[in-house]
Image 1 (cartoon, rainbow, N blue to C red):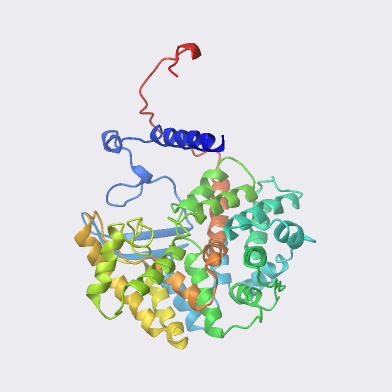
Image 2 (image 1 turned 180 degrees about the vertical axis):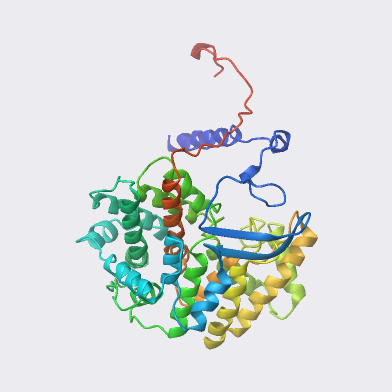
Length: 452
């Protein structure tokens, strides 16, 4: 009986899939931009924002040409922001939070006051960790994070109030508590599913976001200044990427319905979890683990190229046909986040004695676009995206793979918060794009007249 049921469910699954397929030629026939992007990779303009800007083209007198990518936060180039705080030997994440939320760089007094405000919002409801995280441990840390966010709704007496002042307070609490929620959900996961010791460290008021995360994650709470600095840098680079990235667009989309902050952020987390968005850095690390096994001589470019061709031909790794970490929906010549992160990761790789592996990453970064160019028809150039080196950085920091995407969320909650406030401030219309039905018209057939 069970086998018959399974066979029938498999048949239903095939029916569901076949009835859902749309002839790809119809997208061109009806001039539909699949994924809201044209063949050149240019996105369909769907909104206006003052928060973040992603540039991949240089504008000339008559036309635009592909150029080095630029990422701009509130009008300031990310390279300037990073150079600013690194030159002064400071962490930059909290300053970046202030800039994205309020549109201006804070002065010293404002920054110190804002840092104290985040510290004051780190407290969790009584017994929340035990009842909502340890008791309801999720098999996936990202799902656990979303579950925790929705649970926090219960403790908020003004959870459904969408007044900007209330939403800002909710967002500040989420920004402050995301590192705790991620760390504690991972500890619960490791305890329940990997049978590791359960270690819960309280956040320290004298530590910033990056240092606190390392303190809460590691059993001995020990980390080096360089480790904290590089994690802080990664958070800065992941904090925002324009309103069109999948999870930020999700934030705008869901916010436009008038729903609460917790539901909105949970939806954004669901988007970020996907391997085509925030989950890609895990895939990069896993892909490199296989590459290191398959390529016997890391200095032999031909061996590396052969493996990359196998990836594209769906003969290696997960048979997806993708070289993870290479290519981006917008950037073609370069991803500015990659350029910044690559130079800094090199320092830590040398310190950890992994210089050879770092050079392997550099080789793949250089060779992959060339291989793709020979194997695929390309409408725009490809280059390494931020996931290419961020996963390697997290491995250097001895961060478990289950936390790679939650770390992305710890950073991007800032951008989501800014975009939610922006949508509410300029709202009034629900976002509802049009979909054209291409189903053939049919008539209803009475039940007794249908074929068995």
